[in-house]
Image 1 (tube, each protein chain N blue to C red):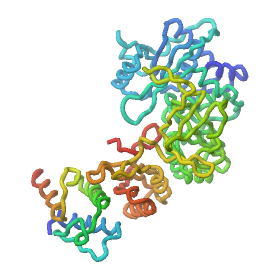
Image 2 (cartoon, rainbow over the protein chains, first blue to last red):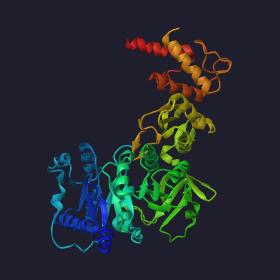
Image 3 (tube, chains in turn cyan, green):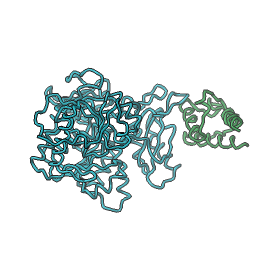
Image 4 (cartoon, rainbow over the protein chains, first blue to last red):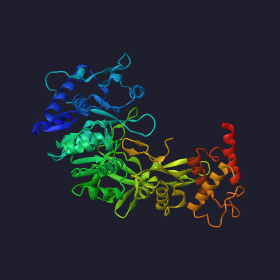
Length: 454
Length: 86
């Protein structure tokens, strides 16, 4: 990763790389990464965790780790202390760098915690980059302890090295830097030498001002994020920001949302991306249509990413896949990875039908939440919806829907409209409970679907 | 009619209304939930009744392992709950 920053700095050291609580130039970011790298090497740190909401510092540390081959792992910036201790034990992290007082207070014989200044070491630039350069990311599962996913910087960088210069573009980091999707944005922007705006709070409600103030032109985010951002912008008296590129990922992109985005941002190109921590990205789809082109299924053996469908599930084979899960042996890099995403091929498209784990079993009938969600979110007055399975004594589970209303609508009328929108579905698919709620159960700007978390 | 009786009859009437099963049916206390001579609820309809009772009243006899057969048995479940908490 350091090589991307160094390359951008060589082109224009004064170009703004990151905007956090202040602006960082590429020159400054490269110099900070070098000093942190010297600190890691001097202290003999082989693996470490980072807890900070100062995204530029986290990025400098990632770059430093890629320079000396120390395995970095970003924890969620707001992780609770008890959870941090559990994670550190689970992933055998004995060194944690942070700017949080409560984290620094944990410093002891079992877990060494230190501030960033301790890594700031002056000296000669490091140029002897080791061959083995590991990175650990954590999955954001909706329940339980996350899984560690082992990556190799070389594999991650191979796909972005030939990225075209993006001078003049201003990107928003709408994902956490600890998320794999966030890492993809960071790598892309550093490779393109663009500016990345890193707001401290990434909820759509909190970023509107930053979009205007920093002149953001490119945003990659979840459909749920976009849905709420559209609602914020409708309520905002200012004209919509001049977004040029809209990317959706992390969840299936409903066709209705793509239409609404195109209407709100007529100048923008809308694309979507399909990616996962385990298998990397399959590239962005720019034709404004739902799903992935089926032509991806027939690529030849030499393509960097290949797809196949087996028993309705999408499998990926990628050169940018993970090395393996933490605590498990390396995977065969040529092996097919089961994505857990259920798909259907309709004409020339691979269409997503939902996560295998989200399927709701209603009296033996397998119900996919997504088609239900698509119908419900198209109902006027519905801002967002969560479709999930609710335990039921008679049929095992029933489809339940939480909806967030858009402004002041009559609750009884809205529930009626939601039920009517699902009337064409087979009976087991129809909702047996519709509730209007203030907000949805969400995680990292994604709606929690499928089997109820409670 | 007690408060529980009235609210549960109203809830079932609304349920039948949404299911297009309300026509020609009078919801009485001794009405059977299932069958041609009763309210005609099948298993999915009954599942919805169970979910609706939980949504509206916070608890539900089906979820607690009971299988009420008549409207009165549903009412009795809530009456018993109140006498326990009273």
